Image 1: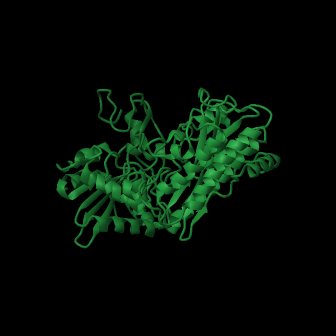
Image 2: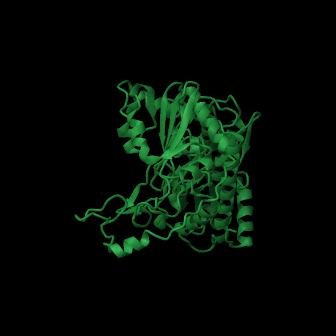
Image 3: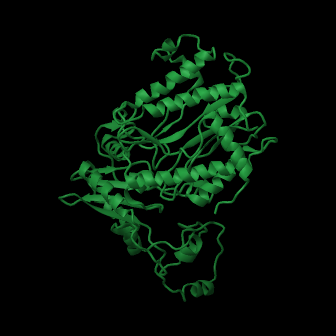
Length: 493
């Protein structure tokens, strides 16, 4: 309980199980603390964030823009999930702290940007040692000045945000909604058209930021490459402890990769998919409570999220015993041929849909060779049929960046129905999945799932596979797996 509270109800930042401290202890805790500044310096990438804010400003002249990062989410009772900032907010500021809000207010020639943030715990109250958000519990926070120096961005105390939002005109304000309930409530939506359940004006803000993210600058590509390189090391770590002759749990493999992700980056970019045997046919298998078996295949879809939140997204399939069977190799090679055809098709100006169709045709031809298609390849590929998708299920890939499914608010005509541009980064990840209960395939195929996924940069002349550090052909996979096993386990250094 905080000072002066007598009804037993916790106030902000305290819990019902907190002790009732005697006044002597409270008085003692309030004295004798030094004030040490954090040794902050301007981050070298701050010009990138400023450039993005300027581009957003130019898109909405004369309007106030409100972009919150979001709040901590409860995992259970009084424990929270680790906080991960909102991607659009981080894209525009580089800030990683919870509860912060970026406000861009028009100034006649552009916008003035202010980052509203929760500053360090004041020693003028008991928060610093009594609240769950206090610095003795969670560590030192930045002062307003320290954060401003680090990000090159004017800052203000979060306590002043309410008054700022109350002063905004609904018809001249756009809010990135769905991240902070208090911000959503404070800025009344404009009484106009609605798109996908939210005011169209606010939806247009989300679209604009998403479409800005389609083209990656040089710094972003470097961030992605760092995350991908760490992911390559994570796959190597897993291969080095994967036995050929006995079972190990999927969660052991998941954990080994997670160690690399936490050591070399911020975390995993998404829940790791580690599917042994028939679990590989479940596209978003994240339970990972199965086990490998000699002779089976192991599908792993995993990615490291770097310290600046850009993430890799890579999938590889390994033969647990070290060698593909003839049938496994045949299916694997179909998927590889599909992926290779898709990568070779990528260049500026090519339609996203055309890359999809390129990959899918190769898969359909492979399914025909396996004797599975009930119609010809051309009939199967017809948009009124697409029966081949029984065994493919998903598209060829997606945009990649600060989100694993980046640019998800972009308009269909600029993404799914649009053309690729130089600086785009996307995954190419065709797959074939034969469900264990599928009676339309031979028994020897049932329970086999294969996906190969790489992260590809669109260049002026074609494409570069950023994840080429991992093997892709069936022969290369077997050789690489043997080499990793020979090298033996290692700890990140």
